[in-house]
Length: 228
Image (cartoon, rainbow, N blue to C red; front, side):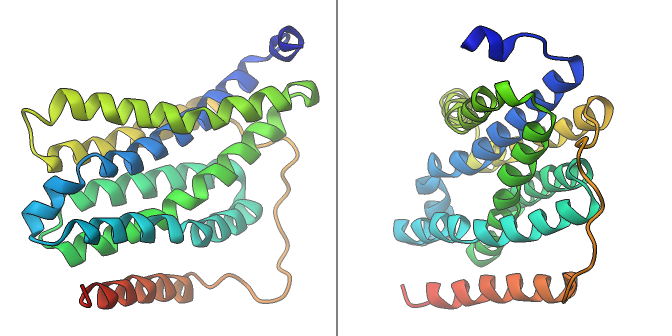
């Protein structure tokens, strides 16, 4: 029953669910905003519309990379600090793409954004589920999923209100807003009660190698773009 799922939540449980919900909502906002301004970007960079399709595809294709990286880091260092790092990462990368001087730079920044975007759902939902009561987890799972279309609605509203008066770069600058969520997480969200520091097993996660691999993927995509 819905009433039993909503009954008896503590302030901490409520804050955790709000943080996870907003994290996914704002992540979707940053991504779906791009789908509303593809023509404006293509016109400014003098590239075909299909090039923006490649940007969107590459962003989504790199999400599993982010899910692996941030998932491993969350198991090792905790859900809460990695969720804050994740939100800051996707917010900063999306914001930086507003200042891209050319299309190739824009493409690479959005590819890296795709990596950061991929980490949010797993880390945020894990933190929420580990705090939620067992009888509320089904409801919480469904609630978190609604964050994605909510982000799309906010992006559409922002585009409708601002695009007639400002250029696409101004809209992309709104990507700085999710960074404010980190303050809320810092002040009102504790670590997952059942989390314990992970142990090193086998090969350790090498951040330098991962960064080089991600950059290599971005450069490869740019190389493919030259075929258009």
